[in-house]
Image 1 (cartoon, rainbow, N blue to C red):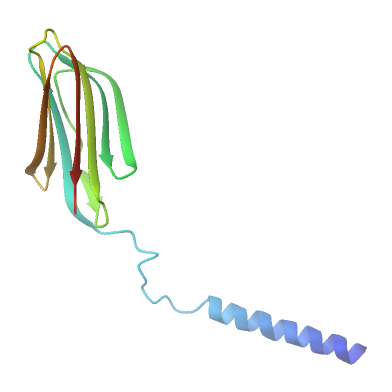
Image 2: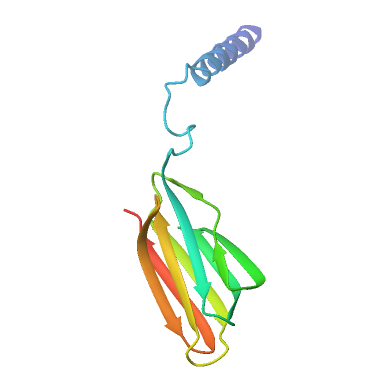
Length: 135
């Protein structure tokens, strides 16, 4: 019985040492530990006609979205957003209030400083949405 216990203990120790050495193997530089490199920049802009105001924004890419509320301004520009290599869709929704039926709200998507998409709506209740494929 004592010999069997020693064999089991020895086998356990050898197994644990083997696991320790294989688990601590040299890093091969795989991409799972490296964040995606930024390949493009995204900037979003919203502008209302004179007397109208922006009230609420939702912007970003893929599922990484930011909400801005209570603005009360006529123009807004997002901070520059570094897009990861695997980003697929830019999303931008802006809401505002127009002074009359001729009021406008224009939203724009810029990638690397180039206008890629633009949408303009009119009315007293202003809602403009853009989705731009980044691939």
